[in-house]
Amino acid sequence: MAGNTFGTAFRITTFGESHGVAIGVIIDGCPAGLAIDLDFIQAELDKRKPGQSKITTQRKESDTVQILSGIFEGKSTGTPIAMLIPNEDQRSKDYSHNENTFRPSHADFTYQTKYGIRDHRG
View 1: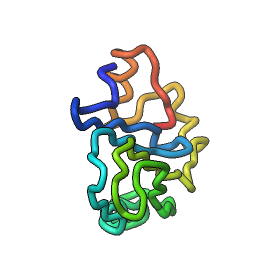
View 2 (view 1 turned 90 degrees about the vertical axis):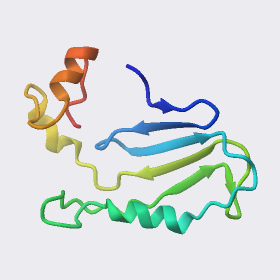
View 3 (view 1 turned 180 degrees about the vertical axis):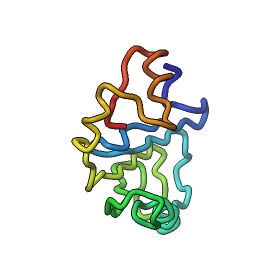
View 4 (view 1 turned 30 degrees about the horizontal axis):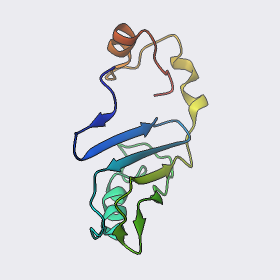
């Protein structure tokens, strides 16, 4: 797999699965003292929250970002910034019927063909 890290001097690594315990990001390369607007970040997350319309999942997730490291008093510290978003209403068991079938309009088949493995939970 090509990986989940993008960039060289400024690197972003994503982790987690949509139906796993959490998703998150590590941002490496931010200089110390950069103002980080956590309210803006949360407002952007709120736009993609589940249950916002009838065509999205009706699961209820707060999608509240947790800062694990790299930000102190609203400014970057120069160390990697780690952010975590817990999946509070993940329902992995809801996808057990997909264990032996491929979901329509998803990349399940191509992923399994390329990498030899897939997580049927999504």
